[in-house]
Image 1 (cartoon, one colour):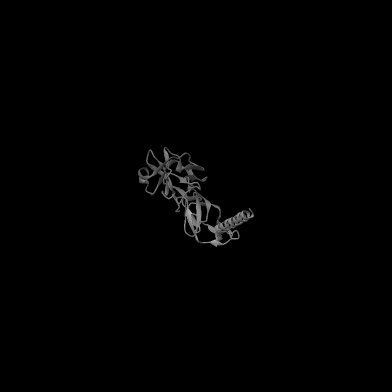
Image 2: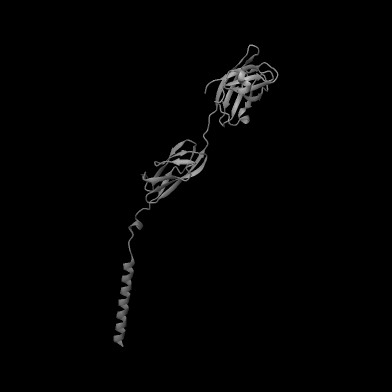
Length: 236
């Protein structure tokens, strides 16, 4: 009986040793998962930008260790809004929003938000001085203006003064040849007052009109086809 007990005890010890050896053999070490090795991450800066159409700005990509890296691929999620080149420079193309992504060769990714707005314009004016004809007196200043928000205006100044007459109309023309006013001029409308300051929003009548399209403004008696006077706008 004791002999059988010893045999069973020896078998149990042998089996346990085999099991322990098997568990140890299945364990492997992954250096890439070593907790002493810092996990890499990428940061794109700035994290968001707001630019205008045609404007450029520079992004940079920095690893978690603080080391700047140029070994990244830059991608614009919507090139129709903002373009990006290999160096991380972006350029606004059209109004809207998109994201710029940076990818490292290891597959680490970060992105930045981009908002593109319309290119702002400064107000610009072409000044003109009225002169009359031998028969009629017209004098004073008028400004042919494009405002910051894109409107085209005729701004009559406080020194404006014109003789009165029947059916006086305003015409923008490309020539000083008065005989072509009615055939080639752009009719703006009636002259609403003969003196003082007032403004006409020409773009409300002709949305596609540009400040460079015309060089002269005529005051013209339409019923009798008689010019009263005109202003010549200064060059842009």
